[in-house]
Amino acid sequence: MKILLANPRGFCAGVNMAIECLELAIKLCGPEIYVYHEIVHNKYVVDRFTKVGVTFVNALSEVPRGSYLLYSAHGVSPVIRAEARERNLRTIDATCPLVTKVHLEAVKFTREGYRLVLIGHEGHDEVIGTMGEAPDNILLVETPEDVDNLVIPSGTKLAYLTQTTLSVNEANRVIQALRQRFPEITCPPKEDICYATTNRQEAVSALAPRSDVVLVLGSQNSSNSQRLRELAKETGKPAYLIDGAQEIRPEWFENCKTVLITAGASAPEVVVQECVDYLVANYDGVVETVTVREEHVHFPIPKELRQLQAAGRPPEPASL
Image 1: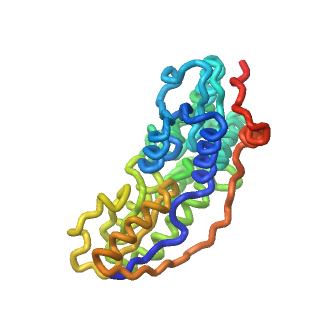
Image 2: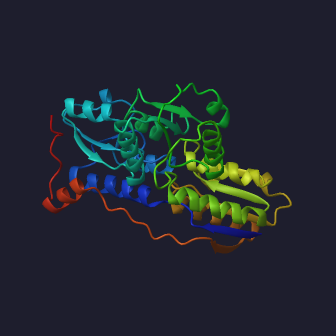
Image 3: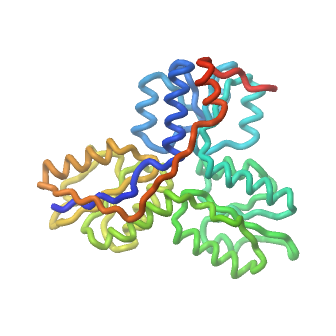
């Protein structure tokens, strides 16, 4: 069996930064840290931190007053930040800078009098946080059909934003529908879908046609990982989204000569290598790494955490 190992794959700069933030926070403050939502959407990563004492919560009411709280890579709304201040929580912001960019765009367009259309998946942590910047001014759409159902008064200034982890093709279809219906609609000068999402999709599009089966490492609640699986299936190849080698099924590889392995932006390399090792051991797999695009992006940890590291002390409570 030939194993095509897609590159780029796995952790993006935002995920690396968020995980580095949590690891450093544990070192500085101890493991009794709370994280609002999953630090990244990956079961392996979340389980690893849970085992050392980190608690992941979906409501700040679960966090004792005065505790350490880290915001996940997906960002949070102003309401959550205000609640954290009210509860006197010691906060560390691990939001991906590319998500922060979308939040700032939402604020900017709203101040300039635009009505906003956000292209994204309802219920996703990132979407909830972004819509929270202007909850009365943002309409959410997911499909071209949703665009048809929008009710926008004549003369309204419109702008659109996108979730950072969407399928490029999927987003473009919705953008096309928006432009056809609202020719005057505007958008940020630089697209919102992040470089890592785009690059991993590009690699799957290039390499899936060369394979018989595609394995995508990532969790079911990972938007960008789901998009990779969907993109591979669009090429006509069977594609499976799995958390690790323990989920591999032998029947997937009947009459299979070539397997493509990739990973979503929140999936660690260790789970990729476990799958590679499984295929090498069970199918005499021969690995060929194929680089479609180089990545050299790095985000520094937040300023407040760098200052705490330099001082060697835990963070102060959020100011009221």
